[in-house]
Image (cartoon, rainbow, N blue to C red; front, side):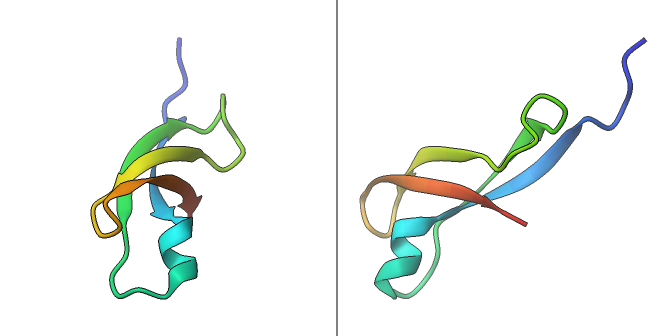
Length: 60
């Protein structure tokens, strides 16, 4: 039987936007399996404020 509680909700935040100092933030909420991917996620997502695809990293 499968154990419950391996999937957790995580927040992804844009790293490039944070470095520029512009107002606002680009964040996405997603779900990951902490047993299969214990390290922090890093995905390329669209940033609507900068109007381009940027790297988003998992924050706490």
